[in-house]
Length: 149
Image (cartoon, rainbow, N blue to C red; front, side):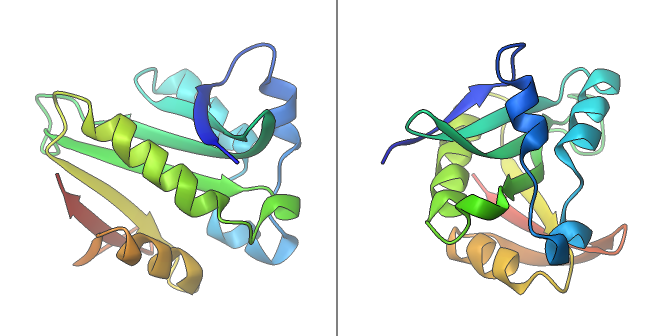
């Protein structure tokens, strides 16, 4: 199995919108429809479909901070979701590894930030295993984590 990140296009948009997490995970991540609507408003945000070979299994969204902002040099991973029927197969970890490689290749990236809902202990374990550490900040009721590049 090869996990890759691909742009959201006209050809795969509907497939992306059909992906959902389990109902008990709805509080952990915004829907893909909300995320894609945000990309319309925030045109620098980078939406990616997560593919396992040729099957779309999830969605990832990141945002490089403006060079003149307080967050200059930071790239935020705003969303990571794996569709309910594809969970538990290692796609989340593989997608994060692919995302980290893509983001680290950006010349403006000095650090990567991510956050999670405190009840989502699986997300915290995943992020910590990839080198992220808690910053001590709570943003919009989510725990912020940081990875220095």
